[in-house]
Image 1 (spheres, rainbow, N blue to C red):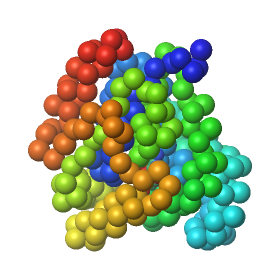
Image 2 (image 1 turned 45 degrees about the vertical axis):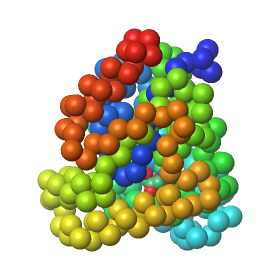
Image 3 (image 1 turned 90 degrees about the vertical axis):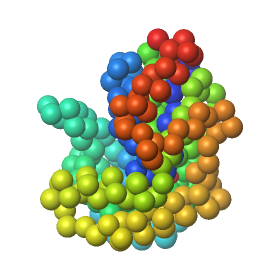
Image 4 (image 1 turned 180 degrees about the horizontal axis):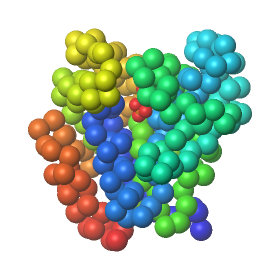
Length: 227
Ligand code: DC
């Protein structure tokens, strides 16, 4: 049953709107949702909590293999993420959380350790999977794959507005630098680099409002006969 549940994969660099589009698709279709980035973020955070350096490959791999992570929905609809029962939802979304995730995500054995855990999310009636290698490695047989992208400047600007709205004190040039560094690390790593699957539909959202991107994605869902 689970192997036959359809999957829609949404891959792309940070800040391209993947999270928003994936959530909208999962909500509209009534499907499950996998935020694979959160698994890498929790792995990075677990290292900080356990006093393990992000570069200590064997120790980070052990953490990923036994990662005690749980997801739950708050009354507000927000997804809460816990490590060993401790709420890490906010900590994993900081810039440091992003750096840790990107660093541990470059370790092949960490990616292997998290593979089966990601595939367990594939359940009826379907799954929307958000990440970097959903269409290429984790769910290569998915019937519908999107690769969402936008210029680094536009992504930095979006992130800047989000963080300012949350009351965080951030610098736009610093954010752009962080995004460019992370793009470089995610695209140049040997293990599952960030690339579009051959059969992915590539959407550049630099100049498109999210509503337009969502409409386009829903048209593709209909064309594929997934609703
Ligand atoms: O999507 P995100 O920003 O939460 O991802 C955080 C980091 O995790 C990102 O720098 C790359 C990594 N990642 C990955 O390598 N593979 C995935 N499927 C998802 C995220």
